[in-house]
Length: 375
Image (cartoon, rainbow, N blue to C red; front, side):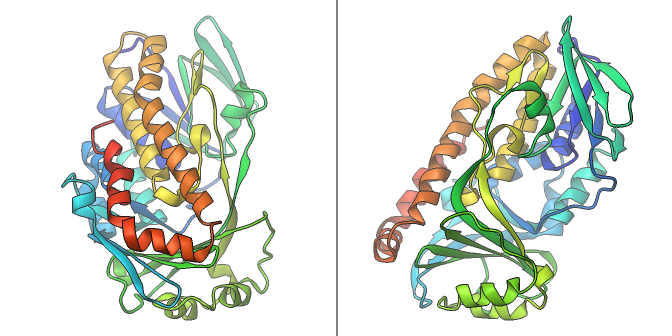
C-alpha cells in the first residue's frame, strides 16, 4: 500500500464516487468535495458496456445497477427510412464478458453514492488553489479554509478546476458534433435494445432504461451553436423529421422544451494526467465524443485502476507511474476511435449507411476487442 494517509477527491460524479468506494475497499479513508450544494444529478441516461459493468462487479454494485436499469442484449442500426442496416449480439461483441446495461444517470449516481456513504463528503465546496511542496498538496477551499493532502484526485469533469490549477493551457475543444438528450416515460415500438437511426449528417440513438423509460440522444455534425430553451422541442422535431423507425414516437413523447438538454460534444487531450501528487481522471483527463459509449466506462476503469495501484504500490509516485502506463494505451485507443467515428457523421449518407450495412458486425467486434482484457 502506498504511504498515503490523506486523499482528497474533487468531484462527486461517477468517477469520484467509484474511486471513493474503491479506495475504501483498499483500506483508505478518502475525503471528497463537490462544488454543487446538493447531490442532484445532471444528465439523462447512460449505456454501460460490459467493461463498465466489470468494474461495477468488482465494486460489488453490478446487481444493484442491473435492477435499477435494463440489461441490453443487442444493438441495431437503421437507415433514415427505418430499414435495418445491421444487428449485433452484444454478448458476442464482448466475448461473454458480462451484460450491457441502460440506466438513468440519477439512478446510477444513487447506487454509487450509497456505496461511498461512509466517505466524508462536503457539498457546496469548491477548490480555489493547489500548492505542492514536500510531496504534499495544500488545497484552498471556497469557504476560506485550507488543508494538506498526500494526494489530490481531480474527478471534476470536463471543466475541471483541478486540471486548470495544475496544468496551464489545456484546451477544451469542440468535436464538430452537437448533441441533444432526453428521457421519455415510454418505450417506442421495436426498441428492445440499443437502437441507432442514421440520417444525412445526423444520428439518433435510443436506449431502454429501467421502469419502461427510454433515453434518447441525437447527434448532428456542424458548427457549434447555442440552442435556446424556448422552442427547442419544436426545432428538434423539425430537424429530425426525416427519420423514421422509432424516432417519431420518441419525439412525440417529449412534451416540454425542458425535456431536452443540448450541449456541444467537447474533448480534452493531455500529454500526461499527473503532476507531482495531483492526478486527474475521467472527463477531467480525457473527455471525448460519446460515439463508442465509453465515457462512463473509461471513468469507472480509471477509478478502479487508481485504487488498485495505490493499494499495490509503496509510494504515490510509483502508483501514479503505473496508473499512467496501465491506462494510457487503452484510453488513447478509445479517444482515437471515438473521434474517427464522430468524423464519420460528416460523411455523405450513402457512404455511411453502406459501410454499416456491409461491415458493421466485423467493425464493432474489432472496435471493442481491445477493451475485453481487464484494465
